Image (tube, rainbow, N blue to C red; front, side, top):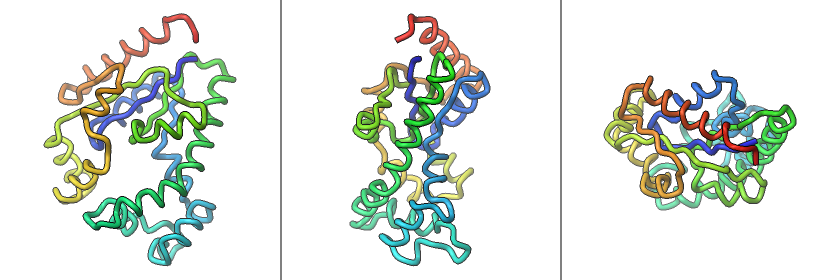
Length: 210
């Protein structure tokens, strides 16, 4: 089984490729979903977040106050980077343990490939080493900052400043491309993006199994 790391800049189009590959029957481990589940109501993760960040981190209905927390970890405050490390220290072990379980499950079911859809893949490589789920190859999906900012404003209701904060919180495009084995440009029609992704997957899965 070949392990594919799929990443990309925020709002660059990674989810489009991830969804497409999933529809082709390839197991996709969605780290955004794992992170969401790790802080769901009643979870151990949410309890620890509320202990660390205080009552404001929890909404009256018992769910995570994601908008408030985003302001603490992505804002311009000098404490944002430290708060982001605290949050990652809580969530990452829960996420990577579950990712490892799902990876083992895909291998046990005889999958030819499994996709680890990781927004912050470059930053997460030390965790992936620790949990023995390092990708065999990395694909990054990229678009210009202007395109990404417009998408975040349109689809997520972010201001330009908020969008730029999110971009700065990630590895740079240059860093992602330096690690990547394949680069898919999202500044092209979706059909071509998906065709490029399919071509990559076909080439990888036709190689001898590792």
